[in-house]
Amino acid sequence: MTKLSANFDSDEFKCPCCGKVDMSSMLILKLQDLRYIINKPIHITSGYRCSAYNKKVGGYSHSPHLTGEAADIQVKNMSTVTLAMIASKISGIRIG
Image 1 (cartoon, rainbow, N blue to C red):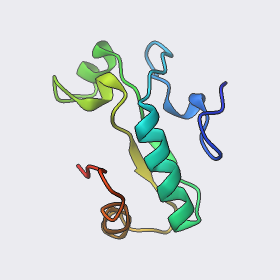
Image 2 (image 1 turned 180 degrees about the vertical axis):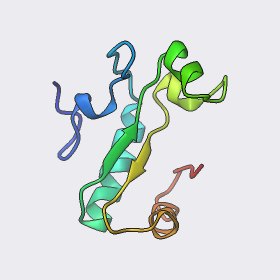
Image 3 (image 1 turned 30 degrees about the horizontal axis):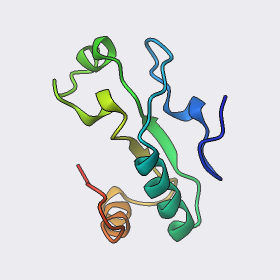
């Protein structure tokens, strides 16, 4: 396990299939910014995906998860809509 930021470590982003972690440092910074703004833990439900795992879960063939430029997240007791509205205020973040 490697610490990627103040609140995130590599184990949270690893591919369940192959265990690889290859995340964009810019994405990690943006997620950390979001964490500071909401002041609540962010649960990573999907980070890096190898092509085999991406195919298994029905991911888009050119998914940004394949290059470590996407993460699916949840925050306990916060709706997806509220989370997306807050995240959209962070410069350069893409909500999918």
